Length: 152
Image (tube, rainbow, N blue to C red; front, side, top):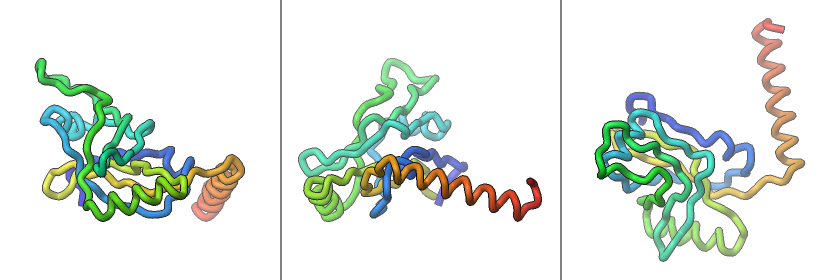
């Protein structure tokens, strides 16, 4: 489902949040923005999603200005509209308002047709002890893999 191997991940998302539900949405972009994404110059680390007037937006996603752009070049941290079904947006909006959940971007990729897509998740913030537990589990899995491969 990817083209040219563009797969920009938000590595902090799985560490800081417990993911409950996932969705793939399209993004409304300008020409210089998609060119920068195709060059791999985007960052999701500080990004989050919000529902404003029944529409889904991603805020804080950094897309570097296109190096060959003119005065028409885009703003690096502009809010960008996400394209999803109205029913899904309303359902997720209700859950974020009542249960204190948040919508986090997981990864940005290009579809087979060359369109930029973003995988987002409905997530619940992890407590500090949950994060420690995740680190312990990750370390033990790494240790097991090391022993199995014979590289002590």
